[in-house]
Length: 519
Ligand code: XMP
Image 1 (cartoon, rainbow, N blue to C red):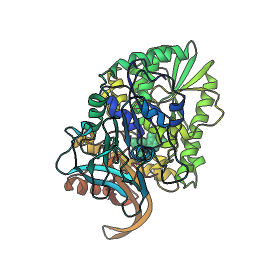
Image 2 (cartoon, protein in one colour; image 1 turned 45 degrees about the vertical axis):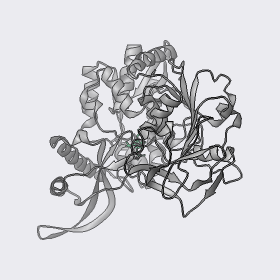
Image 3 (cartoon, rainbow, N blue to C red; image 1 turned 135 degrees about the vertical axis):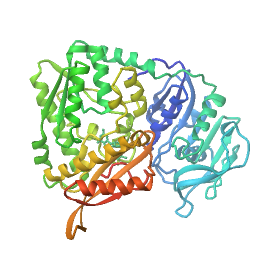
Image 4 (cartoon, rainbow, N blue to C red; image 1 turned 120 degrees about the vertical axis):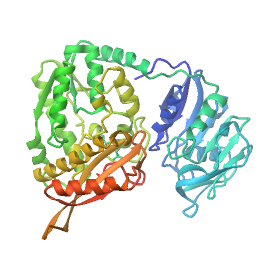
């Protein structure tokens, strides 16, 4: 999908980092259009007229190996400012004659403090006392290339920020795009405004009109079915498509039996009554449970759920004459964590429901209008489409649902237990006005039975895990610090009210190194 407003753009060359999309995101937040491109496609690019700056992303390659991903050096001769991030910095150093070493001893993962060495346009208003930056590297530049200066250093990497101001080439070893880097946006602000001299030209609300036009044009006179789960993403997709093609949209809600307690029916009525959308509710819980019987492997579960989901859609679509499209609420992060959207090599973490489960030979064409947007951008779109607040600000819920929150094998009884726990937890968060302070909260059921005592009786029951995280877009996250009395009370409430649970634990890991979901 090409954006129209691209009379000036920042190109991001994706070397396959898990967080490349965040670079695009930070730049859009600053009001400038940015586009992600593979190293291969940079070679094919003929017209650089509207390219105001180029950013080289991080990635899993190593310039210390014989084979590594690169770009032609001619790219540096176009008088276009270039900023390398992590691998991008190492590649610049390599191409300009510096030295890079892989070192297990000097590697940096996580937080480091960066210290100023020299003034630079790139770091105006960036340095503060205890400037924490987020690192994720084993290789480091150990010899500066000719013509470059050191702007900042950390304890383990002396050449953390470098520049060649005459050639307008800059590099940072840390990741300014992740929220764990203090003041990281300032690096992008300086790069795109002070160095690349771009003007603000990107505004999200104006994208709504363009998306509706895009849907109208692509769908033409055909019919669409939409996978409606009641989460923000699929709801926004349904409203957008409904605006574009009205009665030619049918929404299908597949009840996998792995949804939250009562949530599905409530959403069904909202869409039917409030938005007057054509919605069909399919109860498929038995078949999902049957197919998942004794399946323990998380990837297998995801694949089974994803495939079955699509199969049911296909079956339903055949009942509606003339359906050609299947609409899905796939987002940017869904795609990058399954397979890099732009085709670069990015290590696979999880197969997301929307992508991994798709059969190769689909009978329906996919329409994914949100695949270049981040969650909170989608919320803004939803707001302008008058989506009810309760759906708009609902925490994200994964496609495979409770299937990936019941660790180990899934049974009807376990689903019941988890639905009860989750319901108590979420209601308590809402009543204590904590829900909207948290980016995502949920309960999971661990496959562990432990001994407890209730009254005078020994119990031997399951353990549930509570998770609550702060995040901006799900790419990185920190656990939420609850007041102690909340943890005391919620633990009591769950154990006292849910048959089958005698222990409650709270997960205090961040992402990375964990992920938000357990499977
Ligand atoms: P992870 O566990 O990868 O989760 O840190 C990041 C965000 O993605 C959600 N998630 C999914 N969303 N289909 C989805 O639509 C999926 O298969 C899926 N898996 C994880 C997760 O809930 C979190 O918000």
